[in-house]
Length: 98
Image (tube, rainbow, N blue to C red):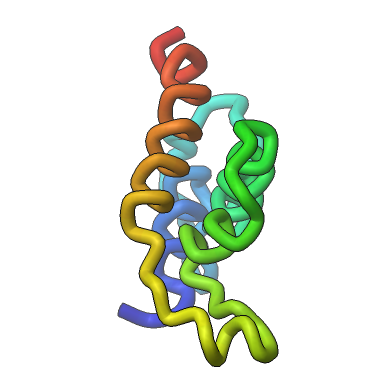
């Protein structure tokens, strides 16, 4: 998968496809266009709002810890990441079910 594959797929849903004269139909209605990075940023913000510690939220995004901490801390935070994802899922579920 290329580095821009998901963004291209999302753009196609919004009726935007680069290099084509005839654009695909917009299947997203009036929803504002977004990218994969927007989804990651939203997750990070919601995780913070739910009280997820910063180092756990960063690991959820597959970011490496920097400096000495990144060198010495090899723990995978699996259970903590699982809980963080559940907290964010619980927060957005009522919105999705509208």
